[in-house]
Image 1 (tube, helix red, strand yellow):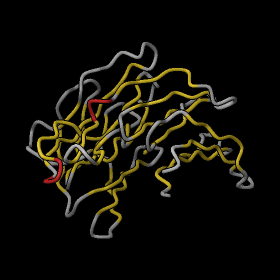
Image 2 (cartoon, helix red, strand yellow):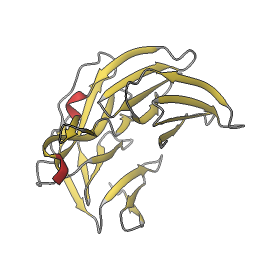
Image 3 (tube, one colour):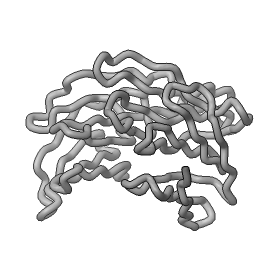
Length: 222
């Protein structure tokens, strides 16, 4: 089956993976050996992320279940419900779910990126969205989406700049949100559809992967 996501721990010692076997696996970065294997997702996990500064990780699946794991023994410490991001195509095929995971710089919130407001799944009518939870209390925070422009889109990835604002990719657009703001404060149109992105650790450059086969680099200027 498919390998859906990889994440590397901050110290570079561990690589986490998830895929179509519904398992989360921890590997040694030094020799590639399998260290631990966690089961708990009832459906396909799409994304995972190490919790900064802790021996823990989170993973999200196609039904919007986000699990918080302890690495040492694979215990599920708690669950977050992002089920509003899950739908069906014709009540048969699953659609949506937790597609991306990220943490704010202060680890005050964990953010799930994906889609919602599905009106016609086969036609692709949906809206990209980021759903965040307070990391300490588990409280669901206001949704963040693009209201400035009508987009049939999925937010394939959301990342946080070190200064605190969130960056998300939707269709051909790069959106920018202030912490807690429900709408973008800036929207940048690119040449083609974006399916992934990542930010330089220093926050100086944003890299976007596009349908046209290009990897583009955008300089982040204050």
